[in-house]
Amino acid sequence: MSVIEARGLRKEFTVRVKRSRLRREKRVVRAVDGVDLTVERGEMLGYIGPNGAGKSTTLKMMTGVLMPSGGEVRVCGYTPVPQRTKLARRIGVVFGQRSQLWWDLPLRDSFDLLRHIFRVPADDHASRLRRCRSLLDLDEFLEIPVRQLSLGQRMRGELTAALLHGPEVLFLDEPTIGLDVVSKQAVRSFLTEVGERGDTTLVLTTHDLADIERLCKRLVVIDHGRVVHDGTIDALHARYGSRRRVVVDLDEPVASFGDATVEADGRRLVFEVDGSAAAVVARLGGLPGLRDIAILEPDIEDVVARLYKTATEDAP
Ligand SMILES: Nc1ncnc2c1ncn2[C@@H]1O[C@H](COP(=O)(O)OP(=O)(O)OP(=O)(O)O)[C@@H](O)[C@H]1O
Figure: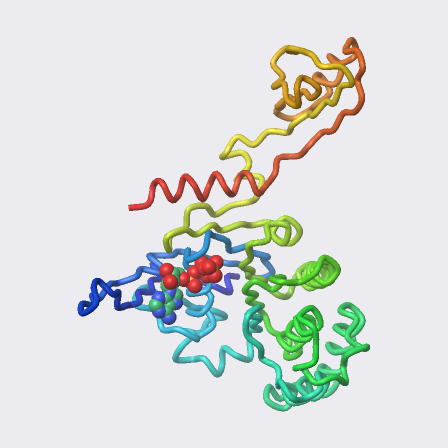
């Protein structure tokens, strides 16, 4: 069953652009330009795109913060803006740059207030909070006012706050932005656990592609407000002909070796292979001074960079 349905979803902003000292012109920015999207229950969807592509605007329309200029969107069966209050009970939202917590209150008090606002039965609240406390290590800062928390601690608090009422869909806009590696890992492991239970749909925007690789099977790429890819990460690699690389380091330089690219003054050979690297490795036996061999999987950063570049070149 689909929990999100968008058809021809559009959002335009009218902005005033300074043309000269006295002249200002109105310009229409098409932030989201006809997005079609269906998301099924339990999916973990990565929604990515370059800066200004329209990701946050899409999420804002899906969560009832912004009214679409055109098209349709339904989330959990509701039309987000007019049915915002009902929708709020069914979704959780984490916007990395904004907080849903009470700045001056200890984290625990924010959680209690949310329980009352969403009228969550005490047992459900307690069991969800217990789970978040253990998975996100909240105990050491539960009693500290939110304004004194580090970014990583606050983000763990935000995730908890977004989940305490048991939402069906969790919207996450840049949830790992600015976090150190340990906090990033904590957030990713937590979201993996949430996703694997299968009852919460995750929609995640991020510029950190490691988040996507770790969490999302399906990737939707948007550019200039339009969807330019919708499919698995593997499909993206296949579309852009990503290949594995065998990198061979040598003690002595060589001028050439078969179809390898020679780098580092002849001390490094790089082979590109489709599928198994065994045949390349077998050919290396006769090479003198073989120091090291590494097999590198296709890099999602490279593929996505190519995709953004192509999409920008094709844009109207
Ligand atoms: N309130 C607004 N008024 C005018 N223009 C806006 C407004 N909000 C967004 N835009 C414009 O709409 C476009 C899409 O912005 P949006 O924030 O959705 O992009 P994004 O993909 O989330 O970008 P980023 O990765 O940089 O956060 C941009 O050109 C932006 O300048």
